[in-house]
Length: 314
Image (cartoon, rainbow, N blue to C red; front, side):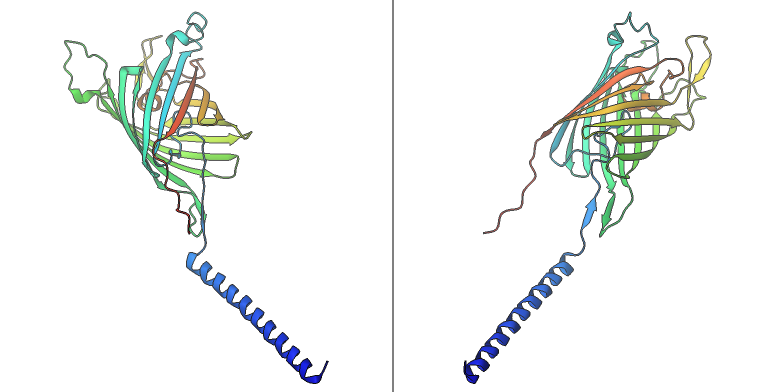
């Protein structure tokens, strides 16, 4: 190889090396610019609880936007109420049906009917904050729930009642956290308002604190437990001795079973009521007295409005 050819080859190699170096630097700068424009991502917690209810308490979950949910909530008779004579409680079963729809990802509205006190209801559930990490860090998911309940029970003909006396209200604030893939918990400050109470000595507003936890022990099964502690419980006449007795707190233990579009919730509870006012503030029986009810919730979701997918380029 002549000296001139050697110099030409070295010059060409140097130019190619410089070109590759420039291209690499350009790519790195472009990626850096894209990262600066996009910024760090935010990861949101999901499936903190599997269903929209733990057992009786609301969970932080809402169906997605455009999703319709139909729920059947069933409660059988108590163990201490001549259980076998009443065909394992089936003869005294109570049912509540609800239908709800998510207008937005953060807003869900619904209606329902319960056989207990022949209640018709309307409710709204709304997500205020969401547990997240990354660009936005927030330790909890905060969800609100408000329900209005109308009792269609017939008033005595000789009694003087206003139509507004049939109305009751419940407001829940669900503060939940998913600690890991298996364990989640929530605290639920709640107020239950009755337009009509049995005595002037009773409070129209009953304040309570709900506590609930979920432990996922298989991919499709989870254990749930919840407890609703009343801060100022009202009383009722105990049919056994005719004396006033404070309404006990509601305790429920259950299992979630997920099967595709269905979520089955099987549980034991001391609450006879199925809708919120009669669970949180008017539960007459206790676990210690054997007033335990077997029940289940079944939910099914239907996608009414499919989410829009990003259009493909080109």
